[in-house]
Image (cartoon, rainbow, N blue to C red):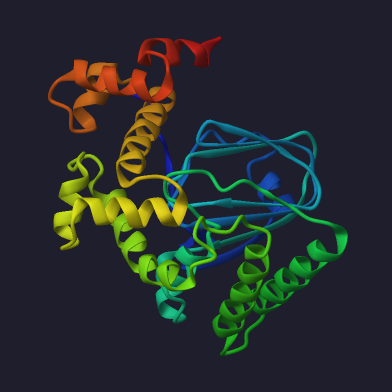
Length: 291
């Protein structure tokens, strides 16, 4: 049985909460062989300085090229394929790093850079804007490789500046002209996203999430819709289908076995849902991966 490997964050063979690595070092670490598709238990940022190739993130194919920044969320399946030795920086940090350095989950959620159900498109920048990110990354590297007693405070401060700068290039929320509604909905959206990541196998209905959050299903749908342009129901279905696609590509499980793993006692119901959401049967989806 083939499983999707999950990588934990390590530096010098020790588990850590933050790590800096260059794309060159990563390329050599794997002896120029491409990594198989895998998940991370941490957030990853790829700051591409000079590289060409392809980056696959949850079935979306992106071109790797200079002056592009990629964001990979916790548990997203991705694979980096470069033509030659790449040049760039890799910033990796866990939720524990955020907690230890007083960076709230709300800060990450509100940025709109990392998404739990959809891929954040890479950010393409001009030379001046990209140079600013490179300077932040250089300070992070300097602190990471140094021995200052405040090294992680320095890293956290520059990481926040890095992320805030990136946020300038992300599309604004649907209700950006209603700051009060946006602010009041952020906590609800964050809680819903957190619940969705842990409960999507068990809970398939909006009312289950709404009950856990002590709000009505209609209110939850409206808040999510006003914040990101999708209803809570759409996000639930998309998360289930995404996981089905991951297992379809990266495991040898049958469609019936995948249905059971995703909480469906009736595999035919899962098959209908998958076809409705993707406009193709699960069998045809899997066959398309081989073509």
